[in-house]
Length: 232
Image (cartoon, rainbow, N blue to C red; front, side):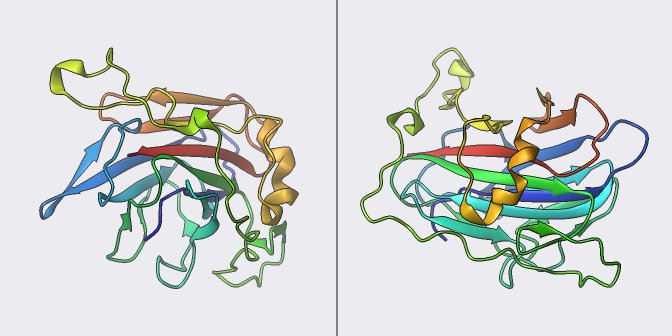
């Protein structure tokens, strides 16, 4: 598959009591084995990756990607990556939900994945509270790619020599999970979520290479954050 930039929209039936945490782990295929890696690792072209996601609440998950070529793509849910996007509190999910993986390709840089979490299912980028809503409602098509459009030079991957230097890992401090900046222009099929960018989120890197995302206050609506996947 193309350069990965996953927009993950995780919509949750928000629990009344904290914590409303989300845990994200990146795994890379090593021979016949999947191994967790640092979320800020700079991947090689051809690497195969997947994601593990756990939330402390029930809801729905969506993922969208902006590749280093500037192309937008809905990554999850869809037919070939899994259409069951409802998540249950405390249960671990693998994305893609099928037996496949995402293959790193495209120009060197940061693929930008948008992860959105909402308490109710979303139809066409808008919220719906219908209890009869189907289990899978795809987002509308993302905007078309602009030929020749380049991403900012700040998206170029860089190795931070102060991190894991002894192991020889190339780690980019600009990669990994982060809040969506207030001035970020979202893809046109996510414009109804613009208000979700301003929610306060805490990002905590744990000792097992995963990232925990936790709201500073109880969530009452959709939230969106981005994950930058660096690759050569």
